[in-house]
Length: 92
Image 1 (tube, rainbow, N blue to C red):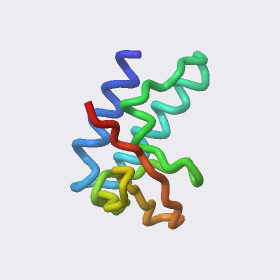
Image 2 (image 1 turned 180 degrees about the vertical axis):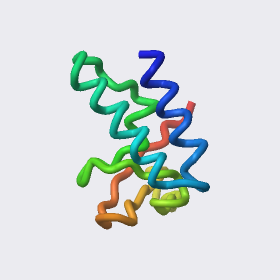
Image 3 (image 1 turned 60 degrees about the vertical axis):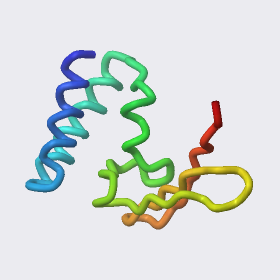
């Protein structure tokens, strides 16, 4: 799990400077998860598109919008496939 978290952290840090290297880090992290049947934590799965399963860097490979309806939500649009998904904001 430590290795997966390190790969994800390095991918996020390198996404602006070298996107190819960042995507390789993500592929390695996913392969480790599949090999050892480790569930990827929620904090990491939010960086993957739900449709094309690609790594989407916040504000680089995706658009993030805040919904203005009565139910407050965050809309995340993947720039690679165009899929839109919502994260509902629950008030405390």
